[in-house]
Amino acid sequence: MLKATNISFGYTSKEVIKNISFKADKGDYIAIIGESGSGKSTLLEIIYGLLHIEKGNVYWNDEKLLGPNFKLIPGEDFMKYLPQDFDLMPYTTVEENIGKYISSQDKNKNKRVRELLKVVDMTEFSQTKVKNLSGGQKQRVALAKVMAKEPEVLLLDEPFSHIDNFRKNKLRRDLFKYLKSKNILCIVATHDTTDALSFADKILVIKNGKLIAKNTPEKLYTNPKSAYIASFFDEINKIPLSEMDSNLVSKNTILLYPNEIKLTEKEGLKATVVSSYFKGSHYLIEALLNKTTLFFEHHKKLETNQQVFLKLAKKTIK
Ligand code: ADP
Ligand code: MG
Image (cartoon, rainbow, N blue to C red; front, side, top):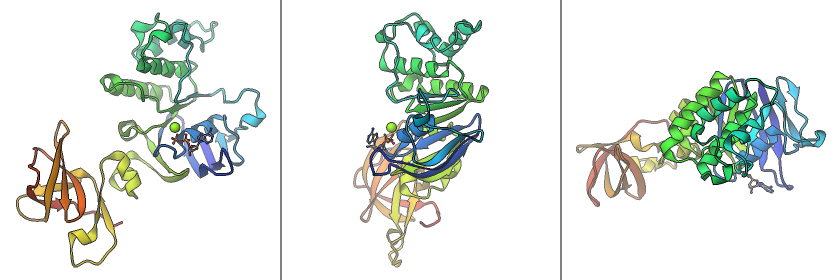
């Protein structure tokens, strides 16, 4: 089990990681989400042992990790870390880049390289020099490279950021299935909703260096504690209660996703359509409820300035 206890860190006197604690089990997939600058990459570097922490500790199976000040080469052998700017050897082939991390004594070396090439769907490029690959292809090689030694813990920083939508979904499914099958703990910093919602066992939400929520994707999605959390998953409506009932003198608001607001025939709250955005399976409609801008989903386009009636899902009040 990986355990972080009360870790704080600052590059300068200003702390950018503030008292973060969490636990993760073998084989888990943990997604770290948060706006850019919130501290995701810093947290991964602390766990891997690239940054020295003054306060708090990181443990692996109850053993305290010493950090860079006590090691000749920073980083832990049982972990692999894929930074945002993956480093590969440009003048050697894809196969050599991956194979470099597997001992030549290992009689299964070629088999493992082939297996990894398959996971990242790069088999046909095995003999291509890395410098001749696209950004997304390089990222796929970098992913295979960090898996080559079969680490117990894999730390990935925005691992699919350069990979196009044509193959991202399949790659994600194949990769996370592979990691589960090998019982590898994987911690991923991401700003991609699908990375977190569809695959993670647990999501950690960071804001300004603080861990503000940790829960399963289902629980975080259905009961987000703040607009910051909800806005990661979808467009979010923050509706003042006073807009829903003019007799209410309240500063409270409710948070609703666009799919929690439905158009009705003639009952409900009256709103005016501002725009319709085509989303493939539906339209996202922007409308004005008095002074509040709302977004809801509808199966067809609505005319600008059209009056509509809306029914809002019942939600607990924040
Ligand atoms: P994220 O990965 O969530 O975008 P980072 O962990 O990269 O966030 O950054 C967290 C904070 O630390 C930011 O305010 C960033 O400007 C600062 N920071 C990151 N790297 C350095 C560095 N090498 N030196 C000083 N400040 C840094
Ligand atoms: Mg980052």
